[in-house]
Length: 286
View 1 (cartoon, rainbow, N blue to C red):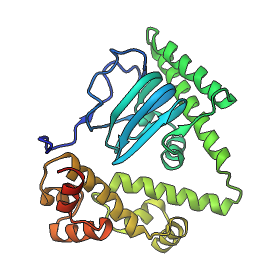
View 2: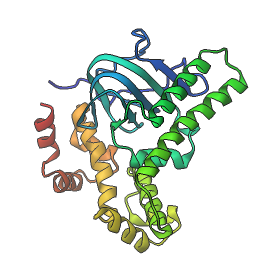
View 3: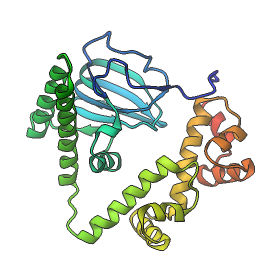
């Protein structure tokens, strides 16, 4: 069945959000403002802390299934929807990413596995529950400047706690390795932000204040692929979303992801996916 829409629906942060943050208890059946069962994306971050229930979602063509307890993140560029949920218990939190410490947000984007399964009864799990419950209670108060600052502080504490757990699971002992990983992860973040207009490795190297050769050597060592491949893959990932969720022509999609030559785009798409854009659309949607 074809999707009649010509754009991927994108939702803004709820008008009910206080200070750029809104938390919803999943047991509140009337809390949702839009249909999350249909593919969409948001201009903000979403976090789920599930303490009970069964969940099945799709995030960028990958089905994600889990049972209690778990943390799930959805970042702004990711197309997602709920497939099935049974007896959910926990919280959904949406927040403006500009409120979050840049280092923490970058670490979460690069390190977290969706879902992050939690050990019920662990000290980490109990701290998450306490903080989330506190955020919900503070949010329910009449807001003022200091209440808003409290919500921001609690949110950053919650996310920093998760970041700290991730770092403890993946210790980095050598300063040189640490620097290389920072370069790689910052580069990956930049590809998500600029893939439409930055097509050359030198543009990313300049943003990182390092040489193009150093950037390429670092990225290739840690990922196995050169910088140019990551830039192309970021564009192709967005092209997949547009092919699946819209009826835009291949030419329109090529322009949308930053390629002025549709023929070149088609060849690149096939090189990476082993399918032409039309074949991809037929295989995964039509």
